[in-house]
Each structure stands twice: as C-alpha cells, then as structure tokens.
Amino acid sequence: MQWMSRLLAGFRLSLRARLVFGIVVPLLVAVLLTMTAVLATMEQRAEQRMQEDVELIAQAIRLPVSYSMERDRRGSVHQALESVFQLDQVYGAFVYDAEGEQIAAVGAVRPRQEPDFVHDVTVTPDEDAGQYEEIDGRDVYSHYVALADEATGQIIGWLQVTRRASDFEEHMRQVQRQMLAGLLAGTVVVLLLVMLGHHRAVGRHLGRLTAAMARVERGERGVRAEMDGPRELAMLARSLNTMLDAVERAEREIQQRRSAQLELEERLRHSEKLAAIGRLAAGIAHELGAPLSVVDGRARRVLRDEGLDQRQRGNLEDVRSEVQRMSHIVRQLLDFGRASSRERKPVPAGELLGGCLDRVRELAEASDISLEVSEDTPDRTVEVDRIRIEQVFVNLLRNAVQAEAVSQVRLSCREEDEGIRFLVEDDGKGIDLENRSRLFEPFFTTKSVGEGTGLGLAVAHGIVNEHHGWIDVSESRLGGAAFMVWLPFQRRRAEDVGEALSAGLPERISQD
Ligand code: ADP
Image (tube, rainbow, N blue to C red; front, side, top):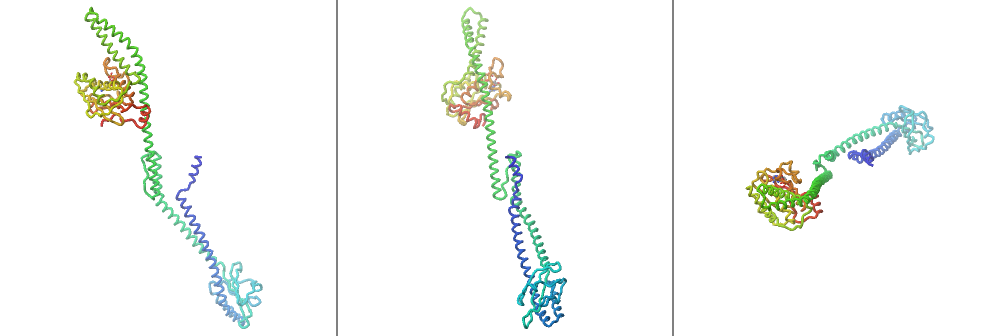
C-alpha cells in the first residue's frame, strides 16, 4: 500500500498546476467558445451584408439597363454594366434577354452557359433571387433581377450581378487569425499572471515552510516555521510549530523518564548486591559471635588468676582488646546484614541530630574539632527507627571527625519536597572523584588496617534505603566532603517510591 501512495504522490499535481488546470484552462475554453460563437455571428452578418451589397448594385443599374433594352441599345446596356464593374465588390455583371440568351457581359470570368433559373426559377419583376454557384471553378454569389417593360410590365430580360465568395472568406480568415493571435497572447499573459500571483501570494511562503520542515526532518529539531504570508499559511505554520514544540516536550519527558529509570535500575542492582553481601556477612558474623565471646570469657577468667605475672597479664589484655575489636566488626556486619528496621516512630528532626552529636562530641573534642548544628532546624518529624537512623548520622559524623585535616564539622537539615534533607559537612580534604562511586560498597576503606572496616557507609546506605530515603555524597561549602541524607516525613509504601522515582528523582545534593 505504501508504494501505491508513493506512486500517487508522484502523480499529484502541484498547487500551481492545479490553479492552471482548474482556473486558467476552463477560462480559456470559455473564451474560445465565446469567440467561436462571436465569429459565427460575424460570419453570418458579413455574408448578409455582402449579399445586400450585390443586391443594391443590381437594383441600382436595373432601371438604366431595362431602359436601354427597351430601346434595343446594346451599347448603353454594356456601358451600364461597365459602370458597376468599376466597383470593387463586383466580380461580373451579365444581361440576358427574355429567352435567357446572354446579350451583354462584363467581368473576368463569364458563365459558360445561361443560368438554369431563367427556365426554372420563377422571378417576377418585383422579386429578386440570389444563389451561390460555381463559375469557372470559382465560388460566386449571384443576384438576379428581372428586367421589365416600363409600360406593360412584361419581362424583357434578366440582370445577373456576381461577387466572389472568396472575398468574404478571406475577410473571415483574417478575422479568425487576429482572434487566434489575441487568444494566444491573452493565454500567455494570463498564465504569467497566475504563476506570478501564485508565487507572490502562496508559492514563496509554502517554499519557506517546506524548507523549514525539511530541516526539522534532517534533525535540526530547534528550527521553527516563519509565521508570515496569508492568514491560512500563517495558521498552518503556527500549528506546525505548536506540534513541534509538543513533540520536543514529549521527547524530553521520555528522555528524563528513561534516565530516571536507568538510575533506578542501577540503584536496585546496587541494593541487591549489597543485600546479598549483607546476608553473607551476617551469616559469618553470626558464626563468629559465639567463639569470640568464648575467647573473651576465657581470657577474662584467666585474668582473674592472681598468680599471673605482668607479661602474661599484658598478653591477655591484648587478646581481650583484639577480641573486642573483632566483636565490633561482627556487630557492624550484623547491622549491615540485618533485613529491616524494627519499630518506626515519628521523631522530631532536631532531637535526632542532638542525640547523634552527643555520641561523637568526646571524639571531636579529643581531636580539637568544632561541632556545629544549624539553628533553623524544622520542627517536623520523620517516621524512623530511631536507633538505626542515629547510627547513620553517628557513622557520618565519626567519618567526618576522623577525616584528614578537619577542624570543623557542621550538621544541618531543612524541609524539602515530602521529607527532610540532612547534611553532614566538614572542611577536610574531601573525597577523590574515583573513590566516590565505590564509597558505599562494603569493605571499601582508605584507612589503614585496623583503623577502618569499610562498613560504616555501607551500613548507613542500607539503613537509609530501608527508610525509602537517599544518601549521597558531594563537595561541601566548607571545602571538604558533604554527605546528604533525605528521609520522608512518613513511612512510604514501595509502590509510592516507584512512582516518585519515575516522576523524577528528588534533588539529592544541592548547596543552595
Ligand atoms: P571506614 O570509615 O571504616 O573506612 P566507611 O564506609 O565509613 O568505612 O568509609 C569508607 C571510606 O570513605 C573511608 O575510608 C574514607 O576514605 C571515606 N570517607 C568517609 N567519610 C569521609 C569524609 N568525611 N571525608 C573524607 N573521606 C571520607
């Protein structure tokens, strides 16, 4: 079917051709028909006039010829005939006696025999007769007049005046030629006017419109049609522009949705990976927990023995401190692998921050770092598992305090969209770009062995995800790292999160 419409489109006439075929051609046909009718009327009139001319001439010499015949003056008859022959219109003039015998003739060609009518046609003295006939191979028109005796009224002869039919035909041919030339010139002028008018009124505007559309088709999506020219074309251009704007908007929207979906998929993959690692870690931690408490218990019991010397006591204290470190790791692993948060309750944002600051204050003071909390904390609540969320902020604050070249850590929050955005910033050296993407992976650490486990941010990420929030990292206005945590006011259902994501992710880090 497509090839057919393409074929038809190939045969489709242009607007200019349609104008020519729809207006100019019918107009010319109408003119041609009118001309033919006018010509026919003119022909008829001219023929009539020619016949009348011949008749008038015949009538004019009728009396002198009759008079001369009555008196049997052949010379005078001939003279009378000669006088009419001087006239241009006359081709020949002939006189016959009552028996039909030719007694005088003037003209280039003479009829070879007497005309039939003398015997056949009854022409009374009051009546005239005219007829077309052929004399010496030429078409002529003859007018016959009966010559009557003045006294008795008896027919004494006949007068024939002829005129060439070709005189009249020649005249008509000339008129036809002139009319045809006029028609041709008129056609050319009308065609030129139509084409020029079409170009000025429609063609050039349509040309600009189609050129603009062709550019859009080639991929220049920003091109728009000029809204000039006649009202209809300007409206068409406006509609096209509106359509192009709508298409562009829709494409942008699809693009946004696609990238939001990709980001969501990436996050889901990441979360699934973390969940799998978490389950593994929790399994190992669970198995390690019992032997570690046995080792610690035994060490404690042996330490109670008063007979131990200083070196043995020191060794046992070392064992206990390493076991405690291992227990800390095991606890973190268990936190990381825990499936979901326990009970959630609405907690005022400010209260949440205060509790966390208290837990790291000692560590900060030991390193001479100032801890600040913003004053304009919103008095809204977030529905959270308080212990777990506090753990998130404690991990972030502890990292900030422990980061290189830090002297100031600031904790702030503000209401944003349907939740609260918390910000933990420091003035340290910040985080290298290449490390940022791996920051939330479990066991990723830049700290030396024994100082960091690489689980703090992974645990924080898991907890924030459980609360259907977001955690992200960026640069701080203080010069170091900035960690942002966004938590919804209310507990969200999984479907709501999906919808919110496809409508566009909330802005995660903004420094304004
Ligand atoms: P850990 O603290 O045990 O190394 P985390 O998961 O808490 O594990 O942190 C991972 C890494 O992220 C850290 O080793 C550190 O390199 C980097 N990091 C976290 N917070 C900051 C910060 N505020 N400034 C600079 N680097 C940081």
